[in-house]
Amino acid sequence: MPRVLIVGSGLTGSLCACLLRRELQSGVHVVVWDKARGAGGRMCTTRSPDSSSHSADLGAQYITVTPAYALSHHSFYSELLSSGILQPLRGLMEGARQNHGDTNYVTPLGMSSVVKYFLSQSGADLFFEHHVTALFRRGASWEVQKKVGDSETFDAVILTMPVPQILQLQGDLVPLLSVQQKQNLERVVYSSRFAVALFYSPDVAFGFPWAARYVTHNSCIRYITVESRRRNTADSGRGPSLVVHTSVQFGLEHLDRDKEDIQPVILQELYRLLPDLPQPMSIKCHKWRYSQLTTGDESF
Image (tube, rainbow, N blue to C red):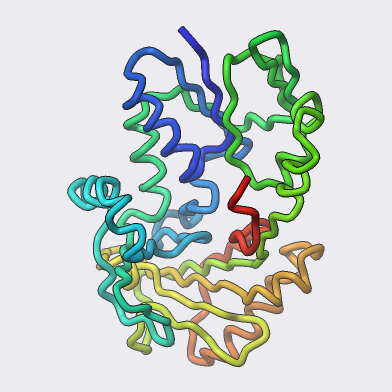
């Protein structure tokens, strides 16, 4: 049976695994590797340290379906809605731009639930903390090396990590690219940003009415959200959590700084915007070096 390796367990990797299984049934052995300790990629959901607070989405916040994709991707959205993975966004999104015909969806269990759903449907063998470092052509197969452990051989490899990480791989992949292909890949650019999650005790209640707020005229913070409000969930017994995303420009200017150095800067600005915000029980900061695709070559 052919063995196919998918590198990356984010949305692209999980959906690829699911589609391979549905199209080829039992005719292929699908394996998924991810260098992280859990599935999700940029759709990750993180839990509070003591589980007394609501979980937090540090990456993608909601899914926007445009008219252009509503028809071609209809089956996926219908499946996720009928499974309870997606729900229409109902919370107040202060300052959000809404284009005509767009529909926004949220995930009551967090954005990673979309990824986990497709992975469960795929039946793939899933391995975490498998960091791919090199690919070597071995006849009709590929030998895949990882940072820790022995290399393995696959009949096909699908890479779903950010393009700069693909170009950093050692071995035979990059030399096999044509000059035009390599140039096209090198033109792909991502935005960068920091995200901070603040976890609160169950007795905390926020005084503002919105589920999320897009901040304007601020060089540091672009977006703030209350997780339970945005996801349409009222969790009795669990405290709220607040997620803050920085602006793209702030992320670019501070990209090479450690998140531990940037966290106090973000918090200082947050308390300036929301001076009545109580102190959280715990805080988690994350740096997205490859947050969102900004430019690329669609002809590739």
